[in-house]
Amino acid sequence: MPSLLYVDSPRSYRRIQGEKKKYMAKGATISWLSDQLSNGAILLLLDCRPYAEYAQSHVQGAINLTIPSLMLRRLKKGANFAISSLITSEDGKAQFNRNLRLASGIVLYDSETNDVSSVCSNSALGVLLKKFSEDVNTPVWLLEGGFTKFENKYPSFCVAGELVDRPLLSLSGLTIQDTDINDRALKLEPITPQITDHQESTTKVPVQILPRLYLGSEKDSSDLELLKKYEISYILNVTHDKPNSFEHLPDFKYKKLPVEDNWRANLSDMFPEAFQFIDEGITQNRGVLIHCLAGVSRSVTVTIAYLISALNMTLNEAYDFVKQRKPSVNPNLNFMGQLLEFERQLRTPQTPSSTTSTLSSDCSLDGEVEDLS
Image (cartoon, rainbow, N blue to C red; front, side):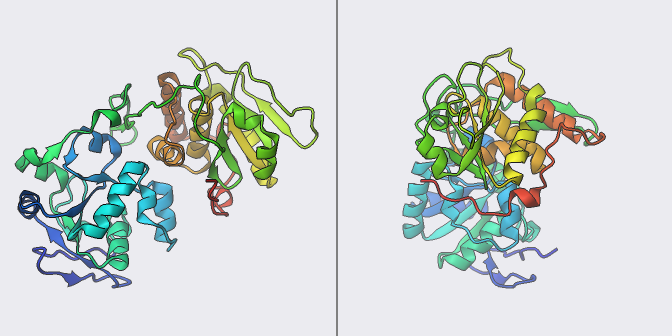
């Protein structure tokens, strides 16, 4: 598998020796970065670690930038993309665009990559390095030793995440031990609850998660013109007290999951019937809307579970995938625990059942997600 060639300093570089040989890579030492920061150099610093690690501590001025695994698979196949689209924060996007114009260099880092030669060209870092090298004239470097080495030597240049970015309820400590997979602990990144399922979402349109699959609120589900606009006719109502607004119309089909948004509700038992309903709508080329009251807890839980089942995502990947499209997502801890257990059950060898979606990943992604803004 092709990899990036090691370069001993930012002053020299060698062309990548791989299948395409189109981009260059440089290695930057931690002492070099320290000198640059001390001298006030304008750099575009990109933290490519999971948000949980970024929020805990990062290089001062760095922007968090990660590629969800599903998007990474598509990028490997040559799909074009804007790097700024990987940044969910509007402030982060503004900072990215500003620094990109002014920066004397772009520095990427992960947790502990020791040198450029260890970066696979098909990894997230490899894809980003290639993208930057092809699209910009600014020098691009990878920090050798990653954030771990830099923080150990230069802690004064590292800062914790701002309070506004920190979660009110951190799930970083919520783990389950899986002895069947090298005793690896499954960890959830912290969530920043911006809204509860009992508050009105500020999203003005349903969010498209996949082609023909939408995530929205009760308000969206009761807007007939909106439903017609996005050709939505299958509606999954994940509430116990909200009506099926257009059940009397022949063009609409409903499924109701009568669940409350509290610490006692069991939503995972209803996943199989939810998946069957979603698959039915998608395979018939009908738009499917999953909604609860505000579209941030119950409906999000079902959506994440569907991605785990239909696209074989991990919980972290599915959560990040949805959050990138709807930053206000906030499943309660009870539902997050059910998602953890659901993922664990899927990874345990078993005979096929209705627990999993029957929709293939190829079928579910055969179209591009349109811009609803």
